[in-house]
Length: 228
Image (cartoon, rainbow, N blue to C red; front, side):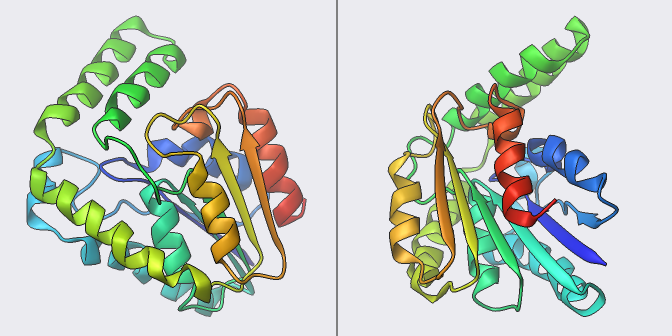
């Protein structure tokens, strides 16, 4: 069996990568989208965890996958991209996909405003859209400063590991991302040592790339890289 681990971003949840997870699940693969420690609920829960706990949440799932699956692919979104890159230096995975990996970032709190605007467009119920919008905006003011500090430290530490990546890697960056600077993609591409590596910019996509207007192109790129 092929296993695919998808890792969400800072203060986010599997919702961020759910469209891609659903798309890939049609292949009969083992799909895992773990909730990182302190995430997925009240953002105040982030007060009780560290960046090492976030990494461990994904690592524990990957440890089982490398034992039980004949091939393992790891896909990371935003902060999850940095965690995915880190895991690729420590485990024998087959392919790595980085989506808007948060190497060079702007204001982390901008994530919630961008996410809220995307969510508002995709809910069919106006009531559900309004509730989801409010939840994401609440995160902008309730995320503990300590969690932001740990996010920044994670990026600082894990970026040093990029030259140790040798696994085939696909890097995709939204050209209109207002949280992660698009130059992150080229920096990662130049730093990793993979013989097989690709970089694509989706010019109209913002940070929530799996939910955005170039979703079809995103899926096509990933399908081609992972093999249909």
